[in-house]
Length: 276
Image (cartoon, rainbow, N blue to C red; front, side, top):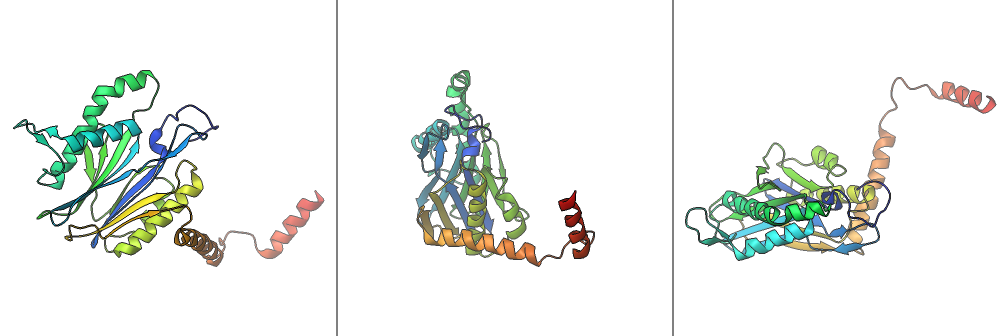
């Protein structure tokens, strides 16, 4: 969200959040901020990371970015069930036999809501853009992570690029690209993810605390960690300060470019500028 503060809704609601999923060998990390607004003078907090868990059978997590009314309506549809294309019976995430089928259900719910209300919202100049991250594992199946678009189509995360992001992702992406590998320890992946959140928050006021996060180990079929980072959490502030200091030390230790003028020439140039 750029430009001057406004009471009007921003053109791109997806930029008002930052969510990511990191799929490593040991399991899955997902996190989402909670800030949503209709301008800088109307800021609210809503949960954007939703957990569906039946211990021993399945664990699924859904993170949402974009138009809140559309994503909330899609969540309600998923809870009530969608008609199966062959049998016509209502199907929920608890009925899905694979993560792929579950991702199809999520996409179907989003598409149905957009078909029902999208045109009316667009007439009122309200953005209908949405995107979702959907990850988890169903018993006897592999752990998977998908990014689902507003048309209902989706892409899948893989070992060569073991993370997906939605919302205001550009500030946090360079950190994940450089630091996260499929072999990364799962709690190191969480730490790197928190650094990417901190970098995003420093660059865009539309992303902010609290942060919801979860950790799911592969084949455990039970959430290992669910946590909300509040504004007064000491660890997150310490992480932010340590990362800033580490960046300062790193750039200080990198040699100057070989084509930069030497100290003597620099002093000469400065003296000339002062007397000019």
